[in-house]
Amino acid sequence: MRIGVLMGGRSLERDISLRSGRRVCNALLELGYNVLELDVDESLVPTLKRERPDLVYIALHGKFGEDGTVQELLEILDIPYTGPGVFASTMGFNKALSKEIFMHEGIATPPFFVLSEATFQEMGAVHALPAAAEKLGFPLVVKPAAQGSALGVNFASSIEVLPLAVQSALHYDERVLLEKYVSGTEVAASILGNQELQALPLVETVPRSEFFDFDARYTPGLTEYYCPARLDEQTTAAAVDAALRTHRALGCLNVSRVDIIIDGEGVPQVLELNISPGMTETSLLPMAAEAAGLDFKGLVHRLVNLALEKSS
Image (cartoon, rainbow, N blue to C red):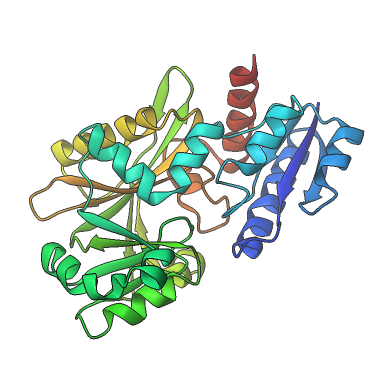
């Protein structure tokens, strides 16, 4: 079987994608697959039409790789691929839309408001920031509505710094999310499967800095990880249930990683869902799989089989 691995591309997460993709390629080669490495550019579609791989492994992160764009292309070309489909990718990558779905489905998520760049330019939305802050309370998490790996995320502790935090987030996307900061234990819940779902052990992340930002995610030594997470049985079960409900609510197939904060009352609050989790040495999905007895090569093999199962 010939598997094309999509990696790199031109998103802000290119370097992380290359790390994920090369690691996946090595695992596929060890498993005996014929591997076609594809650093995504304008030649992607002609190359796929010419080479016709039996399956595409999506190791792209960020825009165009996780937002339904490349998934739609692969649907047009009738090439099976790993990860959730177009709808789940589109909804999951857009934090504003996915949080609306969470609320509709009764899944706890921190309170938030969404403002677009146009409202600041054409409606004077900067003057609404004090009211938004009063409703949500400080500190606030300010993040692009559609971006990954904590890129563009800022924390505002007062009204004086809030406009600058918003401006910074708008450099990454035309919509910005103002979210109430919830203090607690942050965990990642990885889900595998199509009809029958398997929740892998929760990974607890404890950054040495104040927040689990981009550097903390991908720089070895900047974050401590505990897998399984240091939670009691009841809280663990509640977090897993929230992750499974989130996975189903967005119509995910194959794999997802749900980021959750356990608040002071022990309630799991869903922050976001990732449809193309990282596969680097510090990534949370491989860490959770290993705790479940599935090494990296076994995880890649499982994701390939789930993609083939989905396509059939």
